Picture (cartoon, rainbow, N blue to C red):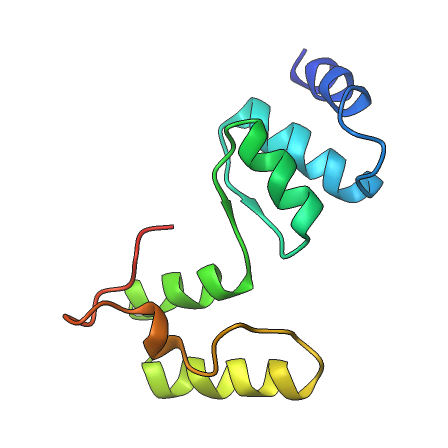
Length: 106
């Protein structure tokens, strides 16, 4: 039954979304999952559908929060991503962490 509902929702999402993004949005919406993307249109659709949304930076911040990475390690990954063409509004993840070292909730 869940698959049919997902297909129905998928068919009603904006046609401007990539099919993969629309599929993931439909699954996230009906299963109560977060949606991870850096695509602005897909993020907008997720927010409009009241789906928790995060992107690459949010994943790195969550890894810091869960102590899977140290800040220096996460920044190295961010810098490698930027060198590979990733467009980041931040040059360090320290800019996303509050004064007490805690990352924001995503």
